[in-house]
Image (cartoon, rainbow, N blue to C red; front, side):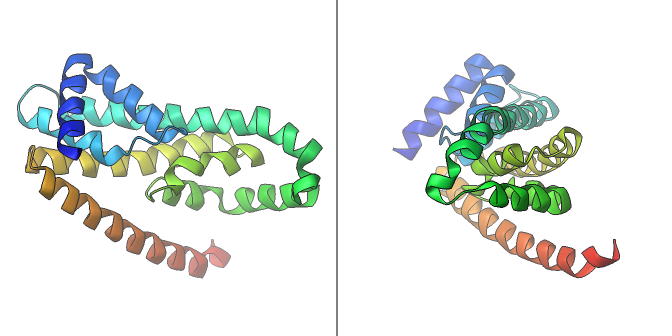
Amino acid sequence: MLHEIINWLVETIGAMGYLGIFLLMAMESSIIPIPSEIIMPPAGYLVHEGKMNMALVILSGTLGSLFGAYVNYFAAHYLGRPFLLKYGHYVLIGETTFLRVEKYFAEHGEISTFIGRLLPVIRHLISIPAGLAGMNHVKFSLYTLFGAFFWVSILTLIGYFLGQNKALIAEYSHQLVIGLVVFSVVLVAVYVKLKPKL
């Protein structure tokens, strides 16, 4: 099944080019569950084959991630926020909770957004609390771009060096996720330690 999906993605990306990468990563970053682990490595393989440009592949994937993140951000901010402020108390989400979310993202939005872009599941959802809290657009964009660029670049390089070897791509992608979870824990620990001094 995975073999067929990757072959389809290679063909789709090859046919649609950089726009295909942008659209697939935008979908991946919003609420449509398309794992980036099966989008960017095939694009990296096409770079290896000389059919695409590495910089443009990474740029397309990164900007697609930002676009998808903003879909969630705006949906949460302009639809979810008014709805929850009006009806949230029925499910124990009152105005006090919103004030806490806003305060949290005012103080820790940057690190949360960056790390959120690196972690499975959270990557799709981190834009929602950011939107609910009305996180600053410049900060949200910058840290989303940093996290997405980091993630997209590594996945593209995996595809570039491993080609179409699905077993190795799956294995290295899995190891990458574990490594990024460890990295995120260490980064949070350092952030917590240094935050009072910043």
